[in-house]
Image 1: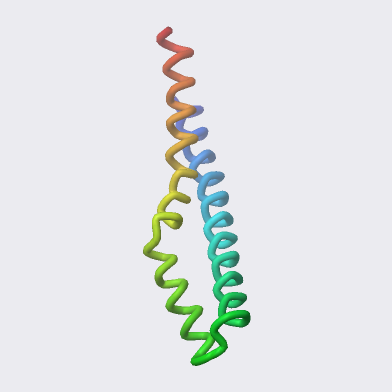
Image 2 (image 1 turned 90 degrees about the vertical axis):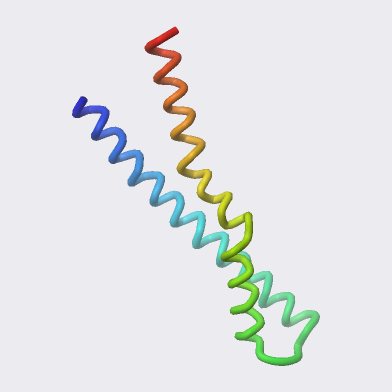
Length: 88
């Protein structure tokens, strides 16, 4: 039982590191695209406000929520493997 608890805690820590890294990377890529779009097409108004508004839209987007799959998919796979190993 202790081994399972240790596995769950270490797995959660590892998945959290992956989630935070992926989230920061995705946000940086989106920021770069918004800055590039403003530089190439818009060039009017406040660049920082344009980027800020774009990132606020990104925060509410489906893509941001899909990154939570980092927790869901491995948990389901490990659960399925444990079930298949023990009960089939």
